[in-house]
Length: 265
Image (cartoon, rainbow, N blue to C red):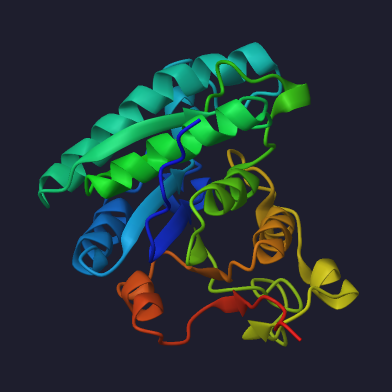
C-alpha cells in the first residue's frame, strides 16, 4: 500500500459551532468566517492549512424548523445533510474570492480505525495539500451512529492532526483560552498561558458548554489536546474573533492557551 508523505508545516485549524454560528438564529456569522478565511489566505504561503469545521447541523436546523440541536440521531443526520451543502458553498465562495481552491473531506471514526481506511484518509488529505488545496473536514454525520461517532469536532480535529502529522493543532473558539474559572461569571478567573502538563486542576477548570447547537465545550478541547500531545503536536486554544489571531500564531506571537508536548529526556 502506497503512503503519500506528509506535507510539513501544516496547521490543523478547528472552527467551533459557537464561533461561526449564531446559536439563536442558526445563521453563519459571515463577518467571522470572512475574517478567518482572510487570515488563512495571508499565511498560506508559509503554512499548509487543513480546516475542521463545525456548523453543518446548525445550518440545517432552520430548514427543518428546529430551534435547537435535536437529540434523535435521524434528525441530526438530516440537519447535517442539509447544512453540509450550505456550509461548503459558503466556504467555496469565500475562498474563491482569495483564489484558493478547497475540497470537502468527510470522515467516520470507524472508517479510519482500520489501517486501510487510515492510509486512504492520509493519502487523500496529503495529496490535496500537495496540490495546494485546502481540505475542509467534517464527520460524515449521515453515516455515523452514536456508537461510532467522534463525539465532537475537537476530537475529530485531534485525529486529523495525527493523520497529517501537523505542526500545530489550533482550536478556535469564542473565548481566548482556558481559564481557572468561567471568565463570563467570575471576575477573578485567571487564564492559563502555557500548559506543559494536563493536571487535575486543568481538567477541573474545563467546563461543559451549554450552547444550543454546540457540543463538548472546553472539556472536549482538553481531551483533544491530550490526544494531540501524545503525538507531540502542540495545541492552542484561541479566540477566533480576533483580527490577527491566526497570523499571530504563525508569527510566534503569544495568544490564547498553548499546550506543549513533554520534552524528550
